[in-house]
Amino acid sequence: MDSLSQIVLGASMGELVLGKKIGNRAMFWGAIGGTLPDLDVISSLWLSEIDGLASHRGITHSLFILPIAALPMAYLTKKWYDSDIPNHKNFRWISGIWAIIAVLGFSAMSAVLGNALFGPKSLWITGPLVLFGLYHYVSRIYKNYIISGPTEIRASFKDWYLLAFLSLVTHPILDCFTTYGTQIFQPFSDYRVGFNNIAVADPLWTLPFLSFLIAAAYFKPGDERRGFYNKLGIIVSSLYMLWTLANKHIVEQIVKQNIQEKKLIVERFTTSPTILNNILWTATLESDTVFYQGSYGLLDRSKDIQFDVIPKKHYLLQGHEEDYSIQILKWFSNDYFSMLIRQDGKLQYNDLRFGSFSDGPKTEDDYVFRFPLILQNNELVLGETQRGPSKEKQNTMASDLWKRILGNK
Image (cartoon, rainbow, N blue to C red; front, top):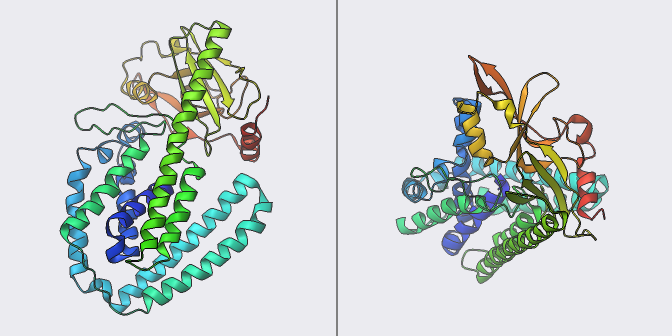
């Protein structure tokens, strides 16, 4: 999932364990734990493009490694609060200012997201809410943290370990529900678990959860309302996740119905939701020489899926099937891929699991995940990864997606 979702989940786990004892500090350290597994992206600074692709959601997401990683996190946080640094006046000012900067950043991100999803008119609604939240939270940070006196933090190593464990381990578990795939069995297996039932960013999972977490943060440690709102957020987000699994089952039954009615000879198929929602889904079907790809929305009036035919063109890899980059890409895409020759003459590998930006005949820029390949020393290697729509489609992508979600049949 996206970073904000992981922060919210981690913060909620922190609150669940230590919210009664240490208040919002539990949310802070839970958010840190919820973010740490994704620090594997730092490896891209020294790894090649293809190795960076293979390592993401790898060893740092292992359910065998993270319980061990929770030990130093618990030890360091306990040692930190056993020292006098957290209550030093200068430290409180510095950390308080950084908290205010974080609130400003989140407010700006909320406004941008609202504008992208609903257009400039949404700013008339989100603008006042953001300004109110800014004023309220900045004043609370200043009053309750920056200028407040020393606070005694009483938490055992066991408490800190449980906070670290839950915030770290829930990260890869949440990632498993997306399409990307998560190597939770490392270092014993590089099998990538992906249930494909929720988009990597889904506001309807994240924002209600975040709202309940914010509500919990208003109350002092020990107040029963903190636990109530936090648990309510966990329940609501869990119910939403169950709803996405139900949606996937419905979509797959409709895909199977289309396969039978259209008498398609299909070896296998996969379904996944499109970005930012769980209403519109992409279905990718594999036959002998082609893939069939179509979209179905739960709001569509017809269950008839119009499939685009995508030639596999795997023959373009002839003689390079065992090249290192090709082996990694095939593993990453679970062999749901097609090939094409770009306008610049380069080969392009298209991961079809993530769908495309438009229906109908596909161009090289239409695939969500596409990988240009270049020939080096008689071996195909991955060039610079390209994602996102073409510049021509960027301005209308959000509105086009919204219209398609509402149903086009």
